[in-house]
Length: 113
Length: 114
Image (cartoon, rainbow over all chains, first blue to last red; front, top):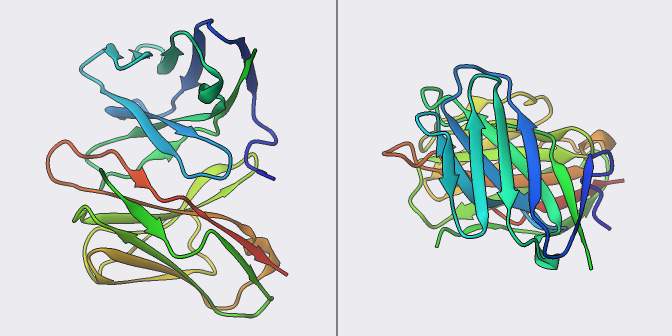
């Protein structure tokens, strides 16, 4: 089975509720942030991104909030569905450094019926 | 849609074997990356390349080498596989032109070294 995420924090949410996944980043020079979703046995899939000149960005059922003062990023998923069950990673980059990303270790989201 | 493909989903090799992991992207991206992913450690960058024939070491290059002979293809080479290289290997690509920092990932290759 999938071995990624054995030591990950886990968020358990009931189907239909909203989910909030948090991420603290480390580099105050980072100016670009991404959220990825990784389902079991698959590669990370891009969900949404945000640049440091914004503090909120919305997609379909997802919203990313950026608080640069405390170096905090969050992903909000509205009306969570069973298909949202996955590991979620945040990543940060300083766009002046060859597009290299630094990844968080991830949070496992479990959606209960 | 961006497509990043990896040559194998699962590989089993023996200690000391030479292992080639291949990655191909179809978006004409300049940058390509190889990561490994291990429980509790997240994604760690092994090598990356920002152009054909160019390569840069990432955070954990020891025991690996890479080859970028064509823009669309980036190969990761384990010269002499060891058991501590058992891992999930992920390839990614992006462009450094415009606002295109998002990295797109392949499905991963799960390597077991016996």
